[in-house]
Length: 95
Image 1 (tube, rainbow, N blue to C red):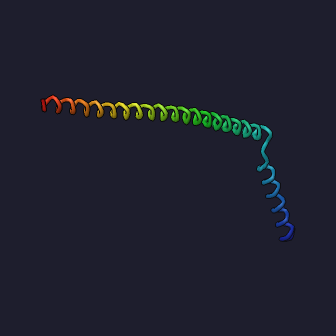
Image 2 (cartoon, rainbow, N blue to C red):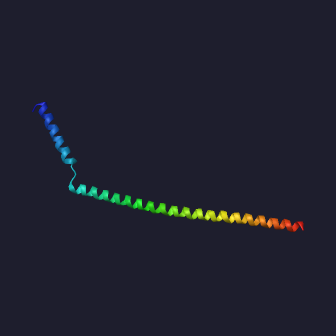
């Protein structure tokens, strides 16, 4: 065998080896598909949980804003009442 034939034979043998070892079997493809479906299901579940968490956070924010408004109104009434009491006290002191 000359050098060119040895080289061609070596290249052909390596190509066959790579082709045979590089091919995935049907079982392997099904396993990859199964894993992909599991990942998709996990992603969908995570997306759903994130949407629920966002809705809950929005609801909590709304409740907190209403509580803040109620507290501000109560504070305003308290200041108003304190002012009225102070005026009444000053009137009583002048008599």
